[in-house]
Image (cartoon, rainbow over all chains, first blue to last red; front, side, top):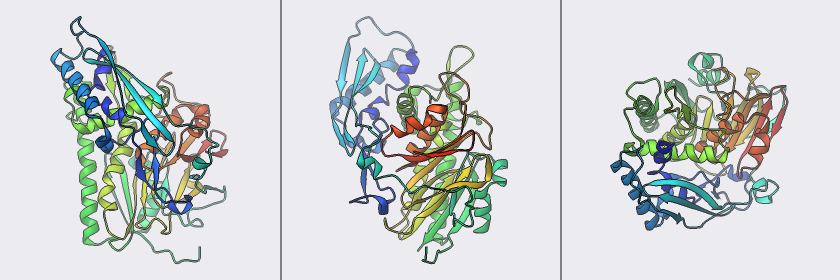
Length: 172
Length: 254
């Protein structure tokens, strides 16, 4: 388990950067604006690292380097103290997000979410993103003017028989 | 639908063991500028494959699994993927996990559940950069959609019927966003609930719509792994849409 903890030591800082990133999503259906700030609560875009606090970054990378020096999986010296690092509160469309990381010696021992958006699915804003999914058992790709198909992960053989393959061939 | 639909330019290549399909509409559809961008997409995906493939002995993941690489020294791309994986594990209460128990007590990595969506979304930037050009890029059934103008005619995305992969169960219009589907079709049951090690029951496929493919792909896999609890879990995730096809063929939207 120590190794597992260490794996994320050098990357956990990204977890703290819970700034939403801007993507517009079917703009025509979005009330008010075609661009939304999006946050999944825990999935953060790594390129948002500019919003990190410098103290957070340096502490985390130090702990990572310490892990290297002590040989990764081995237990480092007995003088470990546990400290916690609290990230900035980041405002997202869905509400404030804040994360805290606990560090013992050279290891990150825990990541906890202090604040996260209200995920009540009846929230009007969230429903504003619902796309018009047209479910129709009699629909065919031809009648629906389909451009692309989302389906199971194709292997090369599965792909040969797939609708996507037919679309790809039709366009060449 | 009175407007005339322009037929997109299309191509398909095999990278990472997956068919990578592209459709372009607009100014650069099929021209030399687009072909250069499309070549960059393929180069990107080949580089990702060289780093994450479990079928190549010299990939970082294979070196890690054979005890010859350490996360502390991993390339930035690996750290990024592992961070996304950890976030997904946490959000799914452990149903989704890239870590597998090895025979000797060591932990092995299988990052496929995160890498595909991440790689396709990342590679799509070369095409999205094309002026006045609409883009739809698919990797093994997961899609990134983009229109140059937010109010352009959306891409029409068909959702494959997991019980009859030659037909569709639904259609979704998307201008800018991503679609990912997890299913037992085509490859057999390859997703397991990491908590039980067993494939989920009573569920045929999960499709997730999200602003980006990293989110859509991970959430589709994490939801599918949870079986009967998939719909309730997806509805608790903000900013997602989607649909679930159950084992009995019934369809529910998120």
